[in-house]
Image 1 (cartoon, rainbow, N blue to C red):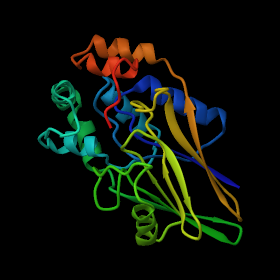
Image 2 (image 1 turned 90 degrees about the vertical axis):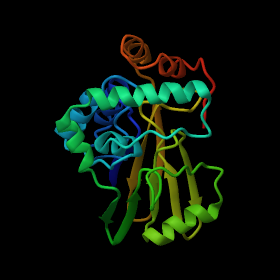
Image 3 (image 1 turned 120 degrees about the horizontal axis):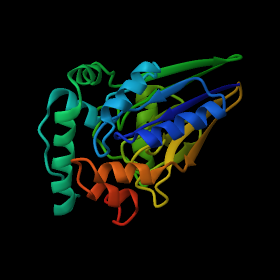
Amino acid sequence: MIQIAIFSDVHGNLPALNAVLKDMEKRRITQKFCLGDLVDFAPWGNEVIEKIRNLNIPCLMGNHDERIAFDIPVVPLSKHSHEETEARFIAIDHSKKYITEQNKTFLSELPFHLKLNYKVGKRQWNIQLVHSGLSSNDIYLYESESDKAFIDMLEESQSDMVVMGHTHLSFKKYFETKGWAVNCGSVGRSKEENRLASYLILTMDEDHMLPEIIQIPYAIEETTLAIEESGIPDYYASFLKNEKASVL
């Protein structure tokens, strides 16, 4: 049996990341993978990057990582309210100013996709890791998406499981004879009502693979207070306190 952990969307939330890593350690899971979006919305972007780098955790380039690494202009999104649009501009500008050049270089060199292959007995399992999609790190695939969208990803990637993040909403979908599509949720900025830090444990043996979404509490007050004391808009502290409706 092999167990690995996959997580995504830390968004500068160091207390949440520490809680997730501690939970993995308690479960004795040594192989960890990150699907990106290390920065923006909480004030520990540098610390999060440095922890991922120092622990040698393989990590993909999320859309926020790409924006900070290459100073890509922020474009308003139609799904966001006026308040969130203003807050988003300020929060991303905060990252552009405070993320160090060394850490921006690290973000710029992250891979876009990662394909894993594990041999367990006579069986080989292929797992495709993406931030959001095969062709883009900024496409939104929710659980309500058509089955065809996920089946096409499994077939195109020739994998038994595709694991993604980006939407901050976890789900698991199984397609008979095709495989699994899994969203591991968000560590640092969950859009689920409980706002817990979310990650995936994947267990593989010779006969089957089992994805399990793990959701754990963390010191959310530490994060909200740090946001309120930083140059990041209080909008994101209120969001984590669940004082504002989630915008999908």
